[in-house]
Image (cartoon, rainbow, N blue to C red):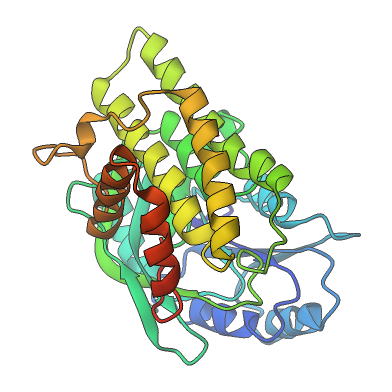
Length: 343
């Protein structure tokens, strides 16, 4: 294997002994072989390390590097170790309970060879614990660099990460990483195939039950809205500002605002949904009283997100303008008892 492989497949591991073998097997089955596996284990208390070391012993031909924390440091620190220690030209971040199709790296390598992008993204399937497809995240043909805020099924050029000292600041990890990376990148390549499988289950680090309170919401979700607003303000002051970037980032901020209300708080009581909605509304209104105004909401706009979020954003902006958002949340609260919704 090259000293600097094309891909580092970075795996954040913590108590995923029941899942990580499937991911490692899917990597082993890749038709494209110029990669290394970098695993950062966050002081697992199950037999994750045993499973990982057995894979290493059974596959001496695969380059696997293992970092083991001396204490539990949390998901953000664990993923940042992957960014810091990757050697590949491109980094793919994987959760240890997900997996990929056998041609995932080959498809991405082909895109890289032809288009020389800063980031490559593919469609992502949400899978339940019975291996049923809950949802596929289809990518618009005109997807641009700001609006795809998943790290699943993505690879990032590591020179951009390291030269610009890009690390995950806090949760939500994928939003900070994708938005900060987009500030320093220009070319995005798209693969309109489902190459990555995202397991949706309650044991997942990103989906464990959180005891929400107003302090947590302020420190987490209000902070990310502030972070995106700061980037918008910097773009507006820049001599090189591009209106398309500014308008799209305003659309991304709207998406985050509504999706936190709709999805992050999906399992909360209706009373708590309203409480956190009021808190987020005060936050975003304080950042920008014209937060709902972006040219990207126009039907004629060429800049769009996926069809589903665009419909959700347009509906929510209309409900807010009509002062009917709380009524809309009540209807949504009832629907989530019977149907799976996700971002």
